[in-house]
Picture (cartoon, rainbow, N blue to C red):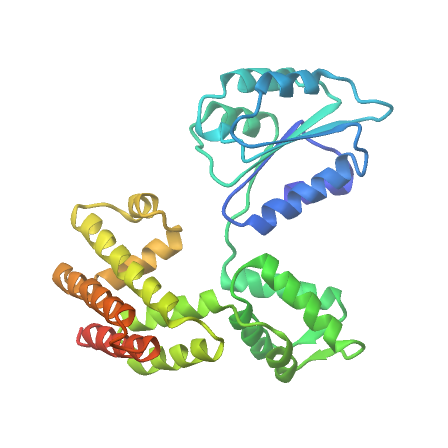
Length: 329
């Protein structure tokens, strides 16, 4: 991202940019920063195209139009899918792009073998907006608090990020809320975080599931209690537990067939770091044990729906049983 920051600082823009990757917040943030720097609030010289049905000929026609009483024209194409299919017409056109026209492509997924991708990297700049590591998130959040004139210790920061999860947009919102709550106070205290920061239920659920799959029964039950206090429906937890064991079985089968992490991530639709963690979890079970876990999930689901067991108790029993199986490894 240093390249884009430098381009913006020097107001020296490349003909074309590609922002791609899993982190929605970064894609959106750099798209907006580039738009503001290139055309500002000039709507006459700004065109936006979205979706997989984009008319490439219309885009080229717009690109050929001289900017109206301004030095630059900007075209943004988002979620076009052009980097995963044949986009020969646009790839061939890019070298002919007028000096006054700039293009920004914004995509979640791309294929680097794609000719359009190769043209963009030759003529402009492609920036990967990937999920940030815990250390990167901590550093980014620390800069955010500092910019707001606030100070936060490492321990308090860890608590804050534990509550917010790793979604950068959510972290930004929670930072703004916390800073507004602090007012003129400079130091962010643990009590402030506990009072104002909303715990992300989805992260809590997946943490609990992770503890179940490694046999940490006591910790799994603690997290389950936390989820109940946050009004999380037990049936949602049961559904996600069942789904996780289905994923573990799929991962184990693929691993047994010789698939590597990249292939497993692609076929199971998992993020690479999640695929690696799931492979480790799956290795703790035999296929028969995973099938038995899935069967038990189905049995308790049926018992709840027939009124034979309360949902809260049923899920607690399931956590004890499943973590017990994992704990024997």
